[in-house]
Image (cartoon, rainbow, N blue to C red; front, side, top):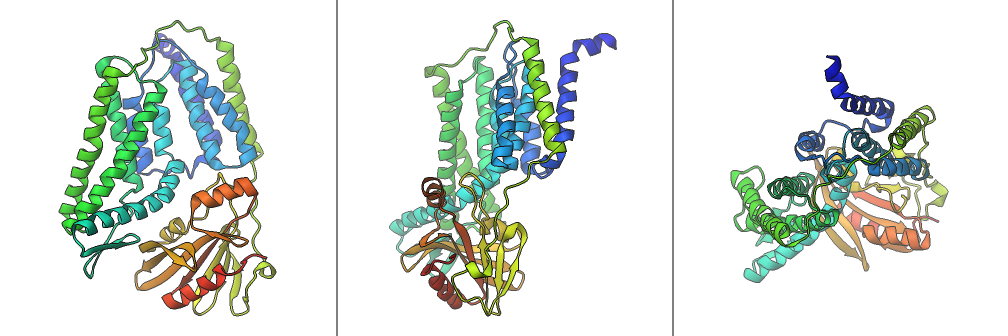
Length: 442
């Protein structure tokens, strides 16, 4: 027993430190480590994908973890702490046992809630463009087809492009499949790809996923295959195989033959043990410090009634969670959400309404007096609402994530998110037109 413990001493120490930092950081990680599709996928994939590289050890993830830990109290983003935690666990293994390939780190990024939120936000805009592009292709083939937002019209019949097109599971499955094929190729040639080859492969994989979704939309529309039908699933699988798996398979064959592949690292380990223990001590110390003295989140200021540049006499004014201002009357609701930093997630109505149980449909970008805003319908049982939203700073109004973030960086603007909701579509557009024509916040 003693010999067995001594033989696996470093593995036991790695597990002990991993458990320790998880326990210390659990209050900050509880929302990030919820048992969902991505976490299960990550747990299943890492043992399969992780490969050691010779007998070398490394502090690369340790240095990254320290940098992120020090950045955490500055940016005050829980996502920064999550990645610091993940890098710490990878460092404990690489510093105490042996160096790993890059795939576990890539997997953590793909399966992280940060990537999930990003995919949800970017996926929404990509889905609008894909639907429009698919509609243009179909209308070129048959003039009875047309598109509007996430809807393709076949005469008077509507076909809705659901959120699963460019949804989280589809994207994660695409990258996971690419990962599996990379691992199999590396085993076959007994070598490993370099980091820039990983980037190229995942970038092309992303393009293939978008292409697969485009032809999936076209196929589903042509065959009038609706959600929850067998044909809907079959078309999804066929397009995924043809436009994702097949191109990546041939691309990997090309890479393995013509591009330089780094050899497995077989150098002797020259890493000083005291460096590893110093970084471990620093990381555990910082985690304990943030547990004892929690980092306070950036406080966002709510908009006071006097700061609103329109008549709110007929509205009931209240402050909701995260300092979101809610104005309600008999006909509509207006939400004024506080500004976000350019690097932080915003208060997307897509995520908020979906989180409240509403089904979102008829999503599209509409133009009101020359300004593009987002429109959609919200449905929950018998409740049917219409909503419009945009980002607002002085007289700058936009629906573009890129534009508001760039102007925040370049000009220091504060963009509030304005979300108007009503059962009456005509009243909704009238109110939106009024607010788009003024400086909403004084």
